Image (cartoon, rainbow, N blue to C red; front, side, top):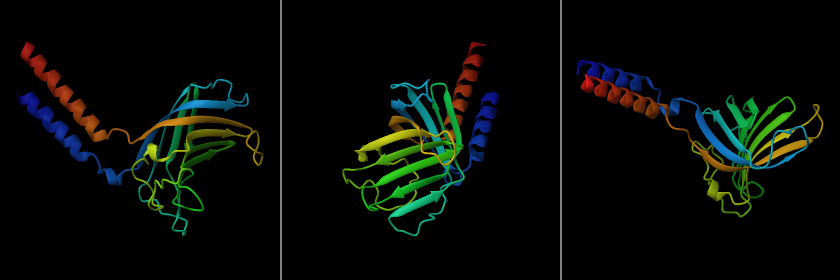
Amino acid sequence: MKVLVILLSLVVGLLGTVPASDAKPVEFVFTAVVASAEHPVFPTVNPGDLVVGKYFFESSTPDSDPNPTRGSYLSSGHFDARIGTLSFNFPLSFIEVLDNFSGPDRYTVAAMSGNTLLELTLFDAANSNPFTNDSLPLVPPPLGLFDDSKQFQVFERTAPGQDFISKIAANVVTLVVPEPSALILLMSGLACLGGMAGWRKRR
């Protein structure tokens, strides 16, 4: 019993050290399915391949655009994605939120490294107005509100200044917040307690 009390105290103590969610970078994860891959620079990518990606940003990132219908958030976060054997790990360039800015609402996350551009775009052509303002979304925008395009794309060019010559287009299936680390820690602690209790009972 004494061991159980010690372990429970340890779990509670560790949970107490987890920072508040609003003090940590906001992280979104997404999955997508490749719809098309153009140009042999991506010979290992085929339609139907699964895309797994994530990006994070600081919740306090300011809007650098004074226009009240266009939010532009330059970020110090990161944008990672994996398509089969391809892996991309880029510093996040910006997040843009368009709320009735010269057309339908749009949400764009972009990262550029060398001659490669990663871009996740949610575009609504049906004018259902997913956004009510141009604020930086701290929860993933609901995919169902974006009727026209929900895509993760990779663009590649052969040299700086040239047009992009190849593209991977993948339809985004999910865009969610990952499980809080505190919950994972709690479940691990409870599993440890249960295992210890069973071991002591068998003895």
